[in-house]
Image (cartoon, rainbow, N blue to C red; front, side, top):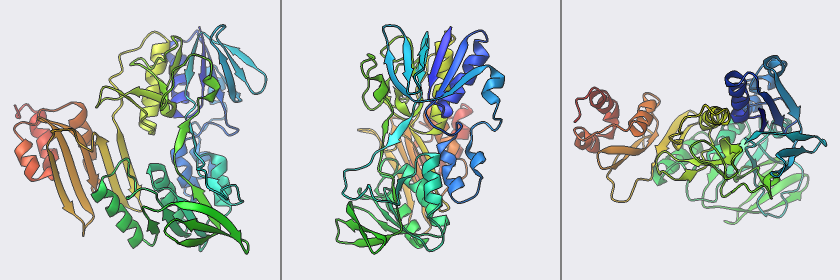
Length: 415
């Protein structure tokens, strides 16, 4: 059996290693579209501020790791797929035959259509090379503008702020991390960042970037003009799937896959950020672009490719974020469901907030600010799911008692 894996992030590396374990006789080829060894994007901010050396972001530390496992490792970009003869073409001229292929190519950052974004010292912070470029500029007293305060933007923001830069964040939505936080939580994170010395503008858009007297001049639609030595763009991503054009693979927000991580083409699978996979909470399909889901996808896809798969229950929408010391998390259907009950406890002064959303007697979503202990219990309550009928009224009165509810109800005391 000839397996080809395109993409060497956490999903692709996990899949390659899993295939080698479950099918020792198969040929496993891992295609990496980047020039650096496989690395984890989530570690890039730590490299930016010098907490880890460059090698610290690598997924596997031994440079002979794949060779020792008998995995063929190729650094080249995929350019096209022929479904007629099951081949993958690469930009180095190679054509790889495959019996089964996994697409784990992740995504790439979007450059918004704004005049001036092609100027020097304007970067995304997505690849290790991006991080090298930013680290040459940022530092104590450097004026930096960050465009975007989503999940990735906030991770980058922390690194830039800790570098000592004079940082301004410009977010188009009316709150920070709008896809994982409600109005209360997003505004609490904003207030926290401002208290820590970061200038945060929400409901504001960069409309152009000029260059005046050797500095960038960032023009915002509220009339502000912000001088900057560096602009970092974190305004969203798109799946790396252009090379699949004409292959027959169905793509929406990502490559649509079933509970075996199989695409619309029988011998092509997808995993990680590029995959629009089963959603545990809705029963539909969604892109959950977090590393734990990517690793899980890689393992499940590899088992399916080796005909040793199990039905995948779907990934849970989950985000845990550390923003300059303030922990925030959201799980599942944190926005709630139609007709469902919700319980919340808000303490703005102390930056603490708990929100629970119910569908009947089951917890289906949760959101929390300022609490680091037992947040994994929330995930357990949602994924099990635990019948909370005997505890629901108490949780409606005080949602912070979810740990007690979990202990009692999982012991069978909550009928």
